[in-house]
Length: 269
Image (cartoon, rainbow, N blue to C red):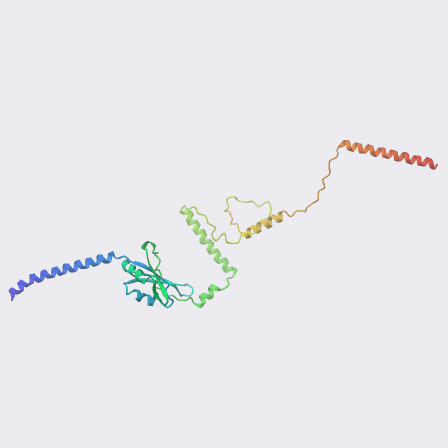
């Protein structure tokens, strides 16, 4: 009996070594195969309204492992927009799904499927896909739709202007020479000061020309042009010789009148 164990033990040991080596090679090959797998994303369009995430995930899982799924929904109502993105762990499976499900009839609709190239898949495509949609509550809706007072609007505009100024400072610190109108151009400008003493600084930023600004400029011009219209009569200049001739004629006429008066007195006498 002892001789039998002595003969069998080396053989058994050799078999164990062979089995362990084969298992190790199989595990390494499997790991390599897993590492070589690349995910593939499929676009699915023309989805009926009755199909949602609970129905789409098990349906596409029959082709392969579904890693992520996103059904596009409206942010306001939460209803399906009719298209989704399905990610599989293997791009070969994704190709098969795109070829098989394209023009497939479901609920009187032709499903449209095509494979999205990896370079066109946005990095934030599946962000928030696992989150369950919840409609906004009534207080939030009322707060959003209420009529805001002038003080609230001033606070909001102040915050926006401060953020914009910080952004301009950051751009200037990084050496980026970029100018944009932003929120400052949308804020109503102050009333323009009338008068000739107002000076204009050429270094100030050029204001954005809006219809309201044009109307103000026109009103300022009209006020400046409001001057009393005076009628000026222009007379022709008379030469000095003509003036002397006129004076002589008047003297002669006076002498003739005096002689005529004297003659009339003699006749009466």
